[in-house]
Length: 194
Image: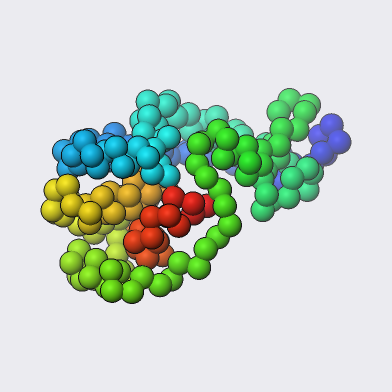
């Protein structure tokens, strides 16, 4: 116990690790520049992810992220589902969902039931993916790059591409979250999805 609070990891459990930055914002934004017209870029800037277009300019420090992860406080302040608490010196800093929304510029609402896409979803899937049921990030990137330039499908694939490669920072061989394939057809819900 440290200054009246307990860390999630005991000092004896602390481990050495390397935190990787798999986010490839530069690549994704270069591909957007080559694939999107000014009107599609304007739509992207107005979307849920518009505030993150400058993400590629931010320096990342894996050492700081690892050190912070080791300083997580157990059972004090905000609940895990509503935020996290970290020991900073002899104080505890609380980071809530509201803080995350304010800092990131993203909207955080209630989760939606998104598993229905109808004809638009079926057409989209058939047009862009052959291995439905196991779509990897590589499949998504290829579908985006092969899509008709400046089309509505290109825009939707671009949003998914941004989510998986920039926000989630997934490697190419990892399966995408297929729920997003339904959500991208409902832009109002997409722009308010947590």
